[in-house]
Every structure is written in structure tokens, then in C-alpha cells.
Length: 92
Image (tube, rainbow, N blue to C red; front, side, top):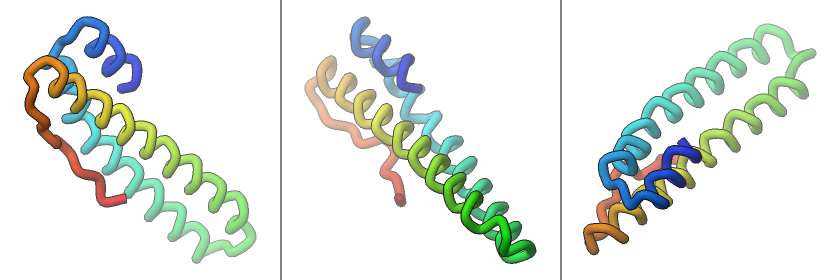
């Protein structure tokens, strides 16, 4: 997503920028899945809590990178069209 939004910026490509925004929903869903699966594993085996917590933070930070890429893509749309369009507002 980051490479695609930077390319969209360089090329002033609104269509590519919007596709970056659309991909954010998939990243959000993956984060939710990882979060829930790790919580279940931690409940089943408390010995893995520390490691699983680190993995949740990794997943969270990757999800935030996707959000930042979406922000850049939204600004590409603004740069080209002169109109701000918030495409995907994250719940995180």
C-alpha cells in the first residue's frame, strides 16, 4: 500500500490512490483476525502472553502503516481534484 500510494503521488493518479484506500479494509480485517486469534491463544495458554502481546503490537503497527498510506492516498486525491475525500476512517 505504501509503495502504491507513493507511486500514485508521483504520477498524480487518482484511481491508484483510491485503490489504496479500498485496500485498507482488508488490512483492518486481518488485524482484527490476528488480535482475536492471539487473545484466544493467550487465554488457552497464559505462558505465551508476553510473546503474543508483542505480536499484537506488530500487527497494530502494520495496520497503522496502512492507515497512513490511506491518508497519503486521500491527499493525492485532494492534490489532483482540489476536494478532500475521506475514504476509510479507521476505528483504531
